[in-house]
Length: 564
Image (cartoon, rainbow, N blue to C red; front, side, top):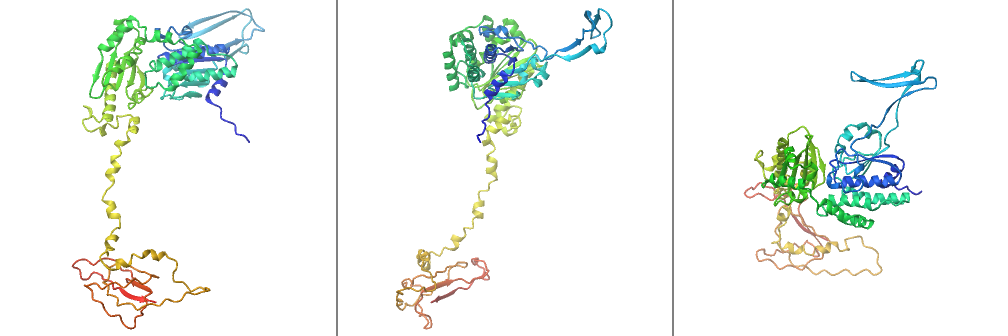
């Protein structure tokens, strides 16, 4: 029986789009080239499939991106998900007038019939149909990036299926279908393959020059025109394919990178004038207040690009951040790191934000820009102090005291800081104490003549062992054993030493040692020591060498003899 293959995420998205008619598309806020390009590319493709598509964003599109196709259709509010409907049965009664009166924070609907009187049976209450049957969020790591569009319609996100398409590492996977690929250079790059599958499924050509331009704008802006760390082979392959589809690459470069408004240039000058550095912890930052925007007649959206084009190029900078105080009191912070060893998203998460490893951000409300600046510096300095091993002024001790201030991700990336602990616990002398390698010292009988007799040890593994004689057709004649010369008296080995040999050929008679005179062999001893046995007494007394100066130490007796 063949096993059914699981359906891919792309196919699940296509099936859900086919089953839906009223689709709401929501890019992240603040809008940038990737979020706007993704939302508008989907909008144009769904319109070609005869879907009722709507794009809404909580913030206005920056002037820099107004050259992109269809930016004028982006709205800023969502129609209520359901209407409360009052139905009057007019089969038996006619209505002359309906008017509304607001009184004491209440709304009175006054219905006047032509004749007669309305009864409760003639009036019913219902909810109208849903305005949307599918929500698609693009380039959105978390629902808080949707601003008031989410906070004002939380119930809508629980009642309508949500497709979450994103490439941020910090994505919260809040959708029913989460098409999240952190290796993608941009969200628009993810949509190339999805739209191509939609073309095959529908049999219609969807990707035209406008869609290709929108998708390429997302790749170019998110990679910093192919300069950022997320520039991968996929970015180049996807861009080449989009150019083949007719993307207007030079139009994108001209409007985004080569055209700067005078107000933007003045604002950039203000940022550079207020730029500060912390050489000890390699931090570079700048702060813009509402007064700075007022003095330069600039909008907060005109800061885009300066943190990547100028601030990150400061010598010695590893962490770069830009604080902006907006008109409504919200403070946004953009964070960049010039090395992959520093996780910008981990720093942003300290303040409720997120993003990529080298590009992240967050926003806060209800706090002064001065206080937030000091809070950020304290956290970032603690992070760098732990990473670089440089204590902060608040923590003069070594970086171990800063471990609680550093993000968990940094602790996981520096396991070497914790390695010395097990090394300290390992007592190096222990192997010498545990190794019972006193035996080689006990067996040091190398100076004695018997060590020469131990060299034929390989003969122990030779088969013929002493076994009962087996009947053989031609038994071998018994060798005549020549009389042995007198055997010297061998001094006993060290206590605890055991040496036994069996089934060994008699060695040649050794020459008498000058220090040991030969002794005549007793006449009762056999002359053929075919089996020689030299064995210490087998008892339970441990083989302990006699202690110097201790005459009472055990001194086991040894037996010396021969066996036929």
